[in-house]
Length: 375
Image (tube, rainbow, N blue to C red; front, side, top):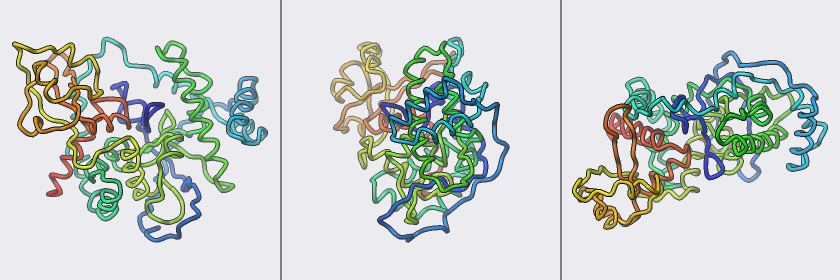
């Protein structure tokens, strides 16, 4: 989730399925107590997670590394040092996880068409239709409250977890401790990424401290993303909302809380109601300045007139657009790339996961489900 990082992390690398996918184990709700509202929509929409086998490994133990990390995080987050040391010592090393956060080999070409086929396919569309029918009322309420279309929320949850079917089978404490201590030095951004996971571990410990005694371990993706929308701990703390009105935030078992939280996340990152995410684009080869158009990457930087002056050809709807545009390039292996003109709302979708491939898959899955729904 974000300039610091998005709810998801793995899909930016274009090699793994949606923002840290895996399967989820059965766990009680990880909830953040809310004091201001009584239950109003409540428990009818709770969906207990199905039990699956968890990924595990040997305990870290009270090593000097663990003791130092515990002291740092306890001091930073005002947590009891003995409690933090105990949690981290009991965390399990996951030897396979560091390999999973490495970028794909440079000789593996990106392929939008192949990537798209993994998400915009009949089983996922059918599951999206069922999800929309089941949660039509909270989806419409989220759209009214936050201004984010239902199809965008449906697209996110469908790409992230196949509508709750794949929420992760790694204990989050184990995954984050492993990445905070054993992040691969060969990663091109190792120092930055290791600091990120250390920060996420701190946020997760704060939230663990709020759990009732005896609560089962929280499971999620190999990178520590959790629940129906695959929020990282810091994003859970900042953007998750109690949308079912039961007095607590539960992204693990409440699809309604997930719906409201995804919409709130989009709004927080600047979603503009009524603005398209992108437009089709062609090129006038005689005056095309593609290097200049691609220079800002996916950050919308060009007015419509400037965009067209550099050789982009837009349809009538796009020519009426009043905000900045970006030229989004999506490679198709050995075939010619695909292009769209991305708006500020397209950029917002990439704040959930820093990948234009991911963003367009979310958008097109939501559109495909909406079409099946007759919306």
